[in-house]
Each structure stands twice: as C-alpha cells, then as structure tokens.
Length: 295
Image (cartoon, rainbow, N blue to C red; front, side, top):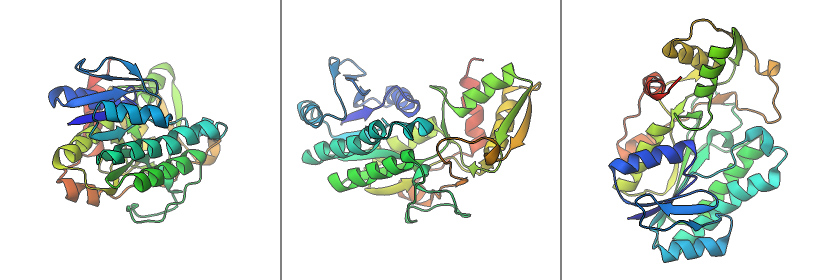
C-alpha cells in the first residue's frame, strides 16, 4: 500500500512517522514543499499541495493508494487576518488531494477540528450535529471537510481537539516551560474539552488504514473531560513542577482575536465501534507524553 502523508513535520505527522517504522508500508511523507519516502524509495521532490497539476502527477506517478492529510493552517488567531492563505491550505488543498486520489479509486483521511462547532453545547458533540464555526480557522476547516467529501467517495473525516505531543509547540510543552520560568500563571477555566495525545490519534489512523477506511465523519480525542486550568494543574503535577501557582481565569480576562469554543467535548462512540478501538484516558496518555519529554 502506498500512502501519502501531508504535514509530516507537524505533531500528528511526526507521530505517524514513528508508528510507521514499526508498521512498514510504502508511506510518502510530505510537507507543503517536498515529499519523500521514509525508506528512501522515492527521491526528494517538490510537491505543492495547493497545485492541482503537481498533485495529480505525484499521485499518478507514485501509484498512491491513499492520502492522510495532516497539513493545515493552524494559527487560529492569525487566521483572522490571513484568511486567503488559511482558506487555501485548509479548504482548497483537501479538495485537490481528494480529487486526485478519487481518480485512482483510492481513499483519503482528512484531519479536522472541534472548531467546526461554536462550543455552545452542554453534551458531547456527535458527528450528526449541525456545524456552526465562529472563527476563520473553524470555517475553513469545515470547508475542507466538505470539499474532501464531495471530491472523494472514500473520504474519512477525523475531527479532533486539544492536540499535543512531544513534537512541535503545544499546550503541554508551553505549560512546562512557563511553570519552570514563572512563579504564577493564569489559565482559562471556563473552556472545557478532552485533550488528544497525537500518538493515540496516529494509532487510530493506522487502525482505519489496516482495517479498511470506512467513509464518513468521525470524532477522536482521549477519554475524559477537563478545563484548560485543570489540564495545566495536571501537567505541573505530573512534571513535578511545584513552585508555580496556577490560578483560574475567565475567558473574558484573556481576550483573543479568534473566538474559542467553550465546550469542545466530542462523542467518540462511532470511531470506537467502527474500528474496535479502546481509547486511553487523558491522564494516562499525558503521563506517557511527559515521560518522553526532556525538560
């Protein structure tokens, strides 16, 4: 099986690379400008995921069977100012990738976000709930979902939330760094959700690939529900940080250009039943991640 993974330098892309080493397949890892096979079977070459002709050539020449699109514009606040670029990467690119793989009768897994909802629910969001983004980032990711589903009949959308890993910049690493630098720290307490360890999401993606991609929309995060404040407290406790006081903040005390969902809990029943997944509790996965960090 030949698989193209976009956004290989991101949190999820890096975790997929690690898993692939233990589950070798013909996997091509791609950033926005270059693509190469991890085992060296494919020489490095340019691939712009917003260039339809280039995508078609790459997918055809390398006989790609499936695409996992992890690439995205994820700077939520900057997206409010850079709407054109955000739409190009989050909405246009998924449609082009899906269209190319459909021509080969292949499948596509499009990674999406809880930001397609406005966060006004009080019970976990199911895949059938009406979408209602209230930010540019959320709106463009929703457009990307629609474009992929329309262009490829074997598209699987995976919405996730509060992603973190040992790679890149994320909330876990930021809280550890600030906890070691500051005596006091304010963190939002009136936004709740479920953290997602990118490693666990990568495992779920491989389960879908190995069992056969079942088209449709799915939700994935770790089990359990917490606020950002509780998450920060847990990070410090597990990391052994004792000299930094974490105090709760209202969202209004920490204004941002883009609105954040106050409730980002996703119902994971569908993906668990479809692929027979057992999803770890958020604190178990957080401990695993922090144990791997060097701080």
